[in-house]
Length: 315
Image 1 (cartoon, one colour):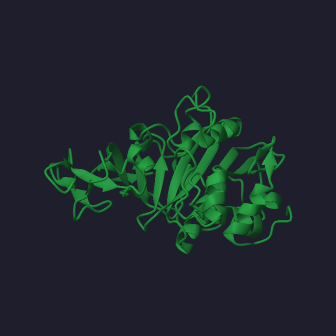
Image 2 (cartoon, helix red, strand yellow):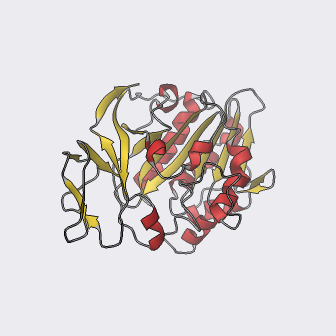
């Protein structure tokens, strides 16, 4: 072990602050010295989402992945260091410093915002992100909701996610959302297998367990760790994102009864400004990832995504 001990999330984060790879802070690299996949697992893309740190703790302490990695290479990365620092200083809403790291411009190498922390950090991490043949970005949500596996576009890789204890799939969100999520930049080829998870609420022990399970099972599926017996999941419920909602101003709020993953008919009022102005559902489907803006920055982001009605999918 690299002097790693099982500690609190704060201590795990402090450990990662001391790690670097190619002079990039917050990156822990393990090589098996045997050919195989190059896997990246990323945490704290939003600073107030510590579930990924719990997965790192488990892999390093319980699994002893440095010793037991069977093949390939593994990168464990804290994506948004400064936002996570603010979170551990007591700012529980510290998702980002300047912009949401899941809303990066597609041309991050060319963007004329050198003083923007998240873009500068993404540029710094990009050469490492591009090495990944397989990747997992771990997220959590402010309130408790269904855990989700999120694919790039409409692609899910059964051999990668099989056995992960999450049965809800979200597809196409990266095509609909404003700008690009961090995991959009992982790998170099369409064949590179990348996904994200929403593990549950931010500081829930259950979220930590799901993040740990997803990380460990993915590595087992890639024959990078010794496999343990489990019953694989084959049937999933898929929600395909078709649209999103942005509130025009702070007077808007969601209408009563609008809940995440609840089926809603076309024409149903989703949100209103309390007067004559409203936003209606444009098709039969569901609202997911519903949030209420808390500051002016968030008015530039989606407050919810709209999906088609759920369908069963066999992988």
